[in-house]
Amino acid sequence: MTTFSVRVGVRSYELDMNGHVNHAVYHQFGEHARSELLTAAGCSFGRMVEHGIGIVLLETRVRFLREMRHGDEIDVDCRLAFGERRVFTMDNTLRRSDGVVAAEIEGVMGLLDQEARRLVADPRARLRDLATDPGVLGL
Image (cartoon, rainbow, N blue to C red; front, top):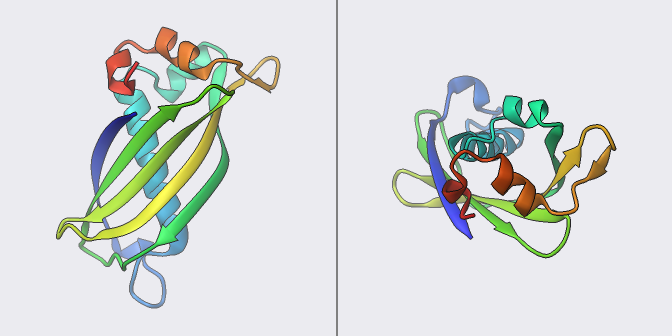
């Protein structure tokens, strides 16, 4: 399993009526970290589309543990792990700059063959072949 991290700042428009980050924004922070991880490996969304594949989110679960508020700086870790199946996981930990874990996100992903409209049989091999820096993905 490999870990990658990005930092995001909480903006005022991401808050709900209680003054903390809206639940849907947690998903956006996780998506941002996943996108940045893939881009750092040379698997940008544009490059994937050029090669006829797209990443799909099949399942997600969020554990909301602590508040995130306007002005907080959040480190969003992304951990990529492959199994033996057509799916893989990209999990996130959202940690405030004071070290407090605010949330944990579990994501089950797949790679969609955009022509066949089916999941790619071996996403690990496909991403390794596509990546310009497969080491970022732990491959």
